[in-house]
Amino acid sequence: MRRHWSLFVTASRYALIGHARNRFAMLLVVVYIPVWIALAYVTIPDRPAPFRMAATGEVLTPPGNHLTQITGALNAVTLIAGFMMFAATFTGGAFDRRLAMAGYPRHHLVLAKLSALTLVCAAVAAYATAAAGFAWSPRQPLMLAAALFCAALTYGALGVVFGSVLRREVEGMFAILMISILDVALQNPLSSSGSDSAVVRFLPSYGAVQASMSAAFSTAPVARGLAIQLLWLLGAALAGFMVFRRRTRDALPPERKRRTQDRSVPGSGSRPGVNAPAPEPGAGAQRVRPN
Image (cartoon, rainbow, N blue to C red; front, top):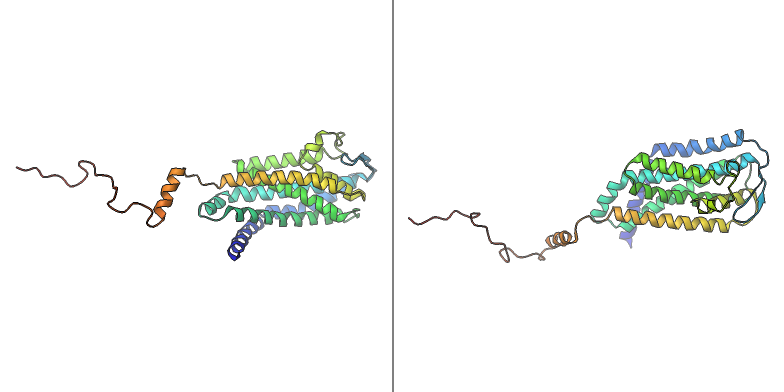
């Protein structure tokens, strides 16, 4: 048990160090979230923006700037979590592969990445909730933080998937950026007249959007929205685990792998001189012909 804990702690430390070295992501967390939320509060009119919740059918009339702050917070946490996990997976893929090839348990590596992702998403969600509630108080701040946390986890898992399957860094960054923008924009009642249509139910952050809107502007329960988001989270996490497992697999053919293992085990191979291949003619000492 102590050995497993030591392996997990070591892998977690490397994962957290990798995130801490991503200074651009740290800058986004510290600056981008409050600036984006503050600009939404200042520039968007505070006129009531009535809309109907697609999950519950409840009609809410929050101020337009408050509504944009919530969607902006969702967009910010999903982008940052997706970027951080994509960068960590893309740049650390070769290191993870070498560790797995050297015998480091892949389950410990996956659990370490999940733990690091959980800590990062919890910090980002709490920071975004505090920034969104600086000028006004959400009705259910803890549930709002939980919705932001689940959305960040989902995009973090998608970042792992993109970091494992895409070959160039710009491709992953563009994919995460466009998916997050389209995902949140189509569900924002101020920018999309079809925010309550059936199509948005299949978007990655649908459950988090429904839960965060209910938590921010009403006292209605948010369990249904969080449950929907957890389904997306489980699917993204499973996909991330599968691609990570495939990326760190042993690339040797089964026959060569068995020969390598036999040679590495003392006494498992053939003894010297037994079943040894016969030397080819002319390969040994030169024969002396009689005169």
